[in-house]
Amino acid sequence: MGSDLTASSIIKRAAVVCGIAVLLALQAAAAGAAERYRLELFITWSRDTHPYDWPGAKAHLSGLIGAAHNTGYRMFADGAPATPGLKQLAETGKTPLIERELETASLIGRVGKTFQVPGIDTAPGYLEVEFDATLNHSMVSFATMIAPSPDWFTGAASVPLRARGEWRDSIDFIIFAWDAGTDNGPTYDWPNLVSDPPQSVRLLATPHVRQRRGLRPIGRAVLTRVF
Ligand SMILES: [Ca+2]
Figure 1 (cartoon, protein in one colour):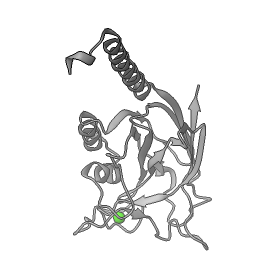
Figure 2 (cartoon, rainbow, N blue to C red):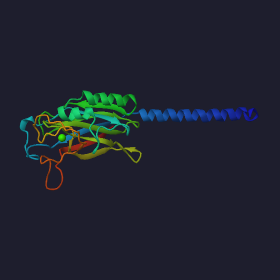
Figure 3 (cartoon, protein in one colour):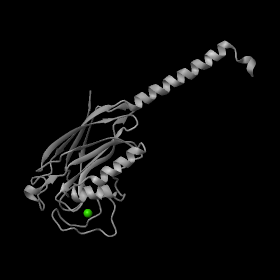
Figure 4 (cartoon, rainbow, N blue to C red):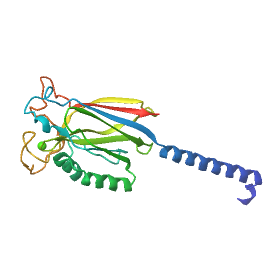
């Protein structure tokens, strides 16, 4: 081989190697570049929309927790068992376990920025929070406890912030009540009644949220790209 290693071929190869290095560096920079989003929750859950067994002035949402992440992390999914962190959040509104799950997932690159914001003291209400996503963590999940309740929560899981290779400017969707499947309590205010064995996470479908056709939403979520 040596003979074809002329000065010009060495320079060409070096140029290719440099080019690849620059491309990789640019890709890494793009993957790490933050895209800022605002999450707004318009909670309509109230005596007017959900009169069945309405819990009165106690009706509130616990602190909201969320994260930007990739497909390697799942906060919750229809038909899958709740993680210990989601169980704790849905039953008590507390977040230490889900925070630990997010930290663990972050250490192996599955979760990027996380966010927390106080909930809504008296439903209905509004809350907002901003967070950063990146190419490596271009989905968002969030959850908050419907309180009081046995194990009911609202939120969304694995919402893609990109479509057709672009960041989405605005995403607007209805959010429903979910049952974490870990407590069998039949109504908002009920002593602890452990589900044994645990059920899977599924949309709540008790009379509290049923309407003539389908399920009554808890509210609306709007994700807006912040420039
Ligand atoms: Ca339940």
